[in-house]
Amino acid sequence: MIDVLYFAWVRERIGVPRERVETRAETVADLVAELCAREDRYQAAFADRQSLRVALDQELSSFDAPLAGVREVAFFPPMTGG
Image 1: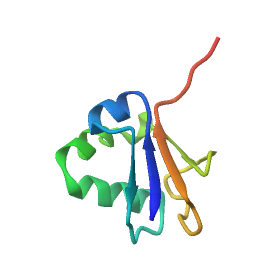
Image 2: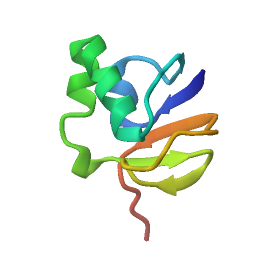
Image 3: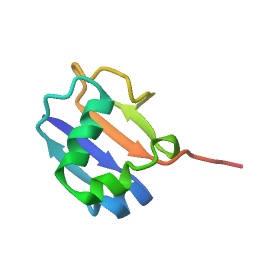
C-alpha cells in the first residue's frame, strides 16, 4: 500500500486530498497509468504530465523513478516563488 497525496488543482480534479492505493506499479509512471485506468477524473488530472511534479517520501523525483520501498507519493504543480 502506498499513500498518494494530491495538491492544488490536482486535488481539485481528483476530488480527494489523499488516498491509500494498493498497487503493483514498479514506477511512478506505472502508478499514474493504473490510476488513469480507474476513472476519468484521474485522466483529467494527469493529462499533462509536463505540468506536474512528483515527490517520493517528500523528495522531488521523476515519473520514471522506481516505487520499491516508497511509502508516500505526492503529485503537485510546479512551485513558483518570489
